[in-house]
Length: 173
Image (tube, rainbow, N blue to C red):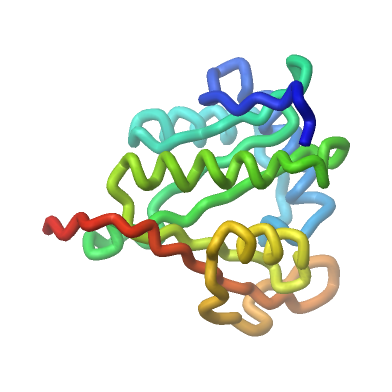
């Protein structure tokens, strides 16, 4: 674990470095099932929407460099799902395998608990063994796999769903 690693809430100054990390994931990995890079305007809108809805964005920083980011949002748009969130974690390719994703995931879990969420869901490409292992180690259970639901890099992709019950007792309507 890198001793200079810190996790903090995102600020507008983090939009550009987060955009670079996200676009690298779009263009070079199966972490995001989309093809076209985000524009700066799209990323700024994403950031503003998260802040407006009081949804966290955490930044992992090493020596004043943005090394990764993480967030969560609604799992589905219908009211009965309001206590369930789906999260995303992205780490800069130059900083992977340094415990950054683990620290970001821990922050997301604590934030979701504080916001009264009951369940956290992860949708992970089934070939992303590192992410699946990370989530297992954090207590997530593998709940289902959707076969051939994505198509990228000239092949079909399977989506692994994992879930963590956060032990919230919220039962409001």
